[in-house]
Each structure stands twice: as C-alpha cells, then as structure tokens.
Length: 67
Image (cartoon, rainbow, N blue to C red; front, side, top):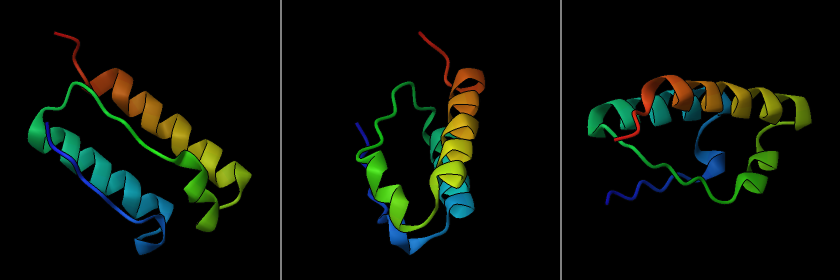
C-alpha cells in the first residue's frame, strides 16, 4: 500500500490530474481511493470538478488493469 496525500489547495485541478496520472503510472496501482472529493470545491466550480472526475475515471478505465 502506498498513501499519497495532496491538499486540494496545493495545486489546481489540472496539476492534480497530472500528479495522479504520474503516481498511478509509477507505482502500477490497481486500486485508488480519493477522499474527500467534496474538498475539490475549494479549487473549482461544479462543472470543472465534474470534468476533472470524468477525465479521472476515463484514465482509470484505460490504465488500471484488474489482476
């Protein structure tokens, strides 16, 4: 298990995506937990967060392999 903690206000939504992508690729992760998603409201509006989550889920579907 690897825990990566990032404060929502530390980066913008785009940089959070980049960091998550790198983390998953580096550690070949098969399970990801993001908690709490509601904290993203500090750095984006509803549509921005929705777009962020859709891109994240799409990335998970194409990059996280189920063993």
